[in-house]
Image (cartoon, rainbow over all chains, first blue to last red; front, top):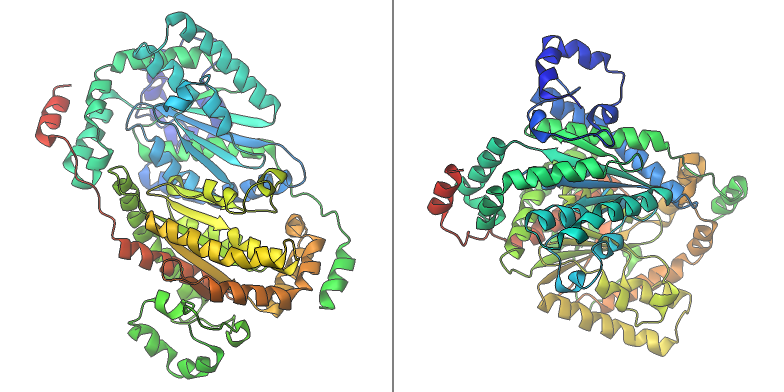
Length: 300
Length: 300
């Protein structure tokens, strides 16, 4: 993942570098396993390996749509013949970081019938009566589907850490439980794509102000958002710890600079495309006699 | 609903009539309550009140997208302030009539996060252990959502009738149970939009042949489809009875000619638009002090 230091350098001949990109985006944005993460060192307005500007980014994202939908159909078709593979996109980020916008603009490129979307809110009393992964397990994508989590089990080591909702010892165990859980998902054919939408403190203020200034966006605003914003450093630290401890090979984190919505949409679409292409799902062969079916059908 | 007889007439100056259309499409396509339905009298390739041709139809449908998404967002926003209203689109029709295509092309115009899609297959053993409406109730849209049923409780008076899966007396009671159920949905704020995708016998053969001729579509083909096709008249009769007995004011059936995919997509998009416009959902006012929130936010 390109850090702030490297930004000026890539800016010099950024266009050339973009065209020469050989490493897939998922290598570029991936949080390295076991390394210390310092979110302050990542520029939230950067556009690593991305299109030159907004217009190009919007066009490039739209252009990915048909390929994404095609791969999704193949994945679904394969599941009808017993292939258990599926994709789970996990979206995490501060308020206004664009989780909902990603669902609208990126997941909107797919066939909605093959998407299983779940937004996790504060746990209900019933959910609190169960282990924290209980509600997560119930919302997993079925074979052949693209699952999308708008927030996830990571809330249980994020807000739970910042707000001290559970004893520290219990919190500490959750990282290992998450890694174990995600490994079991990978073993069962789930490609887990975890995206941290990285926005800056200033961008969040602008977006919250925008909500205040537009009466049609008041429903999205909650005075509690300002209080949460007051705990920004604690949240950033909680994210750093989660990104450090839970970026295993089977379920890596991707750090997506998200101040520019067009880059965010392009990057997440591209990450999904790269993962789907790696899966390379194939239409299953028919298990019937085509000529015979054709003959029978023509007789009707 | 324009019948075959009327088709030639409207063909004379169809273009003019289309522009002069004052009655909403939902009045035109609605199956009148309590009237005898003869599917044979409806031309499946007709395009009542529709755009002039495919190109115009595709463009007109795409043009509805932003308005549909806007109304959907308002409906969702209203639900956050306690509005229980929601929409349920029920799609029924013979194999290949375009239920899946409708989800892809029409529901694809909406924000996927507000859509709750459920495709009903043959009931599982667990589902068979419950009353036939049990699995339906579990899949209903929540307040603010657009629910989509690809097949539905109507299968329990369609294939159940044709295949004699239940005693005739039990089957007979189901129509009343469905009407009672749908009325209770309407009472709870659910706008039920039931669409019968009307295709011709010839069009179904062509579409099945197309699946046979394209190896990438073999996964969609089932030899059982040919056997089902053999019972076409019995299915048409079962649909006629369902349309006749279950087209109450609270949950009317719409008969959509579906031989032309572009017309089908346009018509269903338009039906949804008309219903959403009638609901006229409004963004809820904020329940907080905007100036105070603004001041606090700017201090951060």
